[in-house]
Image 1 (cartoon, rainbow, N blue to C red):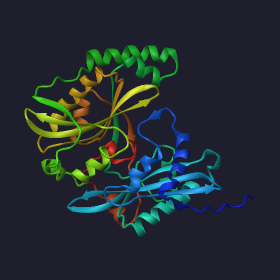
Image 2: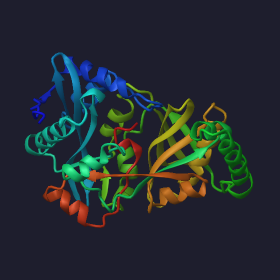
Image 3: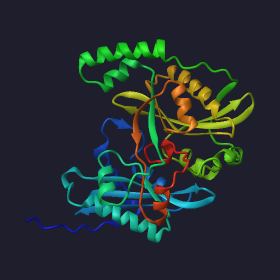
Image 4: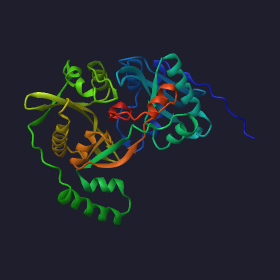
Length: 357
């Protein structure tokens, strides 16, 4: 019988974040959306705009073999502002998997966040590999009301099909079908409004007051005040593009984008967005502007997360975005989490509400 190994996780100091960056680089794969350097983790955790986050790790001698973190964020749940936190960065060295490292780290992060950092809602967006462990072993069920999906718009259909499908006959058939579908059947509805995009270096200082009336329609939404937006997209070591949406000369919303790579394709990720109250329909026009700009800037594919029942998803579909996968949103089932799980809340959730971008 194999002896059960007892692992001793610990919280990393800033100078040790380079160690988890080294482990993370073994999982780059074919998708590059954001930095995995030590300065990224320092920005996200140590220099957090709200409360300091923590990175937990397990060492074997001098080598990090497992990592997990929590990142505090400010959420509005109904009329209450709460301390939420995202659990993420859960990676285990492939040579040490199935030895209890993942569970040990998640339990350490959970206890630290809930007990010592006063976190009320501990949530995450796990991939297909870690989701079963969260759900079956660690008491992190999916949140039924948080139905989020990834929508894409292919610009260079040939390249997208070649990246997605391996067999030559599949590529040829799907190429023909998609070109016909997009050029004949699924032409995006034309814009009929005086909507424009202006790229800026910073958000207007009063952006939160401009958009706050629209946040009130959601039961659960990240608090997108100026301090958060500046930290998330301007102080971030990665480069984001900030687009202010205008109707004539009036500010009616914003969109944040970031370029990345997926299987050799240039992808424009629509990281975050929010429109002014009663102006959500103009999101359609803003997305059409982004598509046109992308065609002139070597982008192969656009990708955007949206809550499936929300108007933003409806407008993405009207722009002929295709839903390619559901995004599971989980939370720890403490007393507060159980309420979130059981109640049919209205959510606003974007890619930037996770550490995926």
